[in-house]
Length: 42
Ligand SMILES: [Zn+2]
Image 1: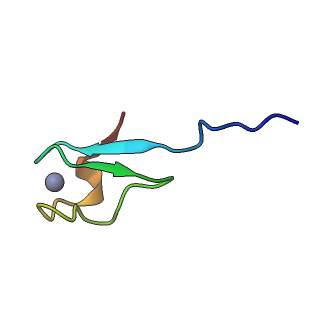
Image 2 (image 1 turned 180 degrees about the vertical axis):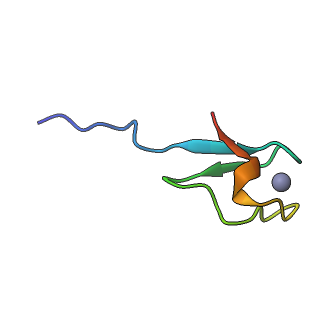
């Protein structure tokens, strides 16, 4: 059985550059308050 360690997705805020790690982007950027639509998968 292999362990897939590639499940952590990273998201970057297009407004301030904040990087968030998780399956889903946050509702709002904790740094600048930008909405989720401003996050892109990286
Ligand atoms: Zn931001």
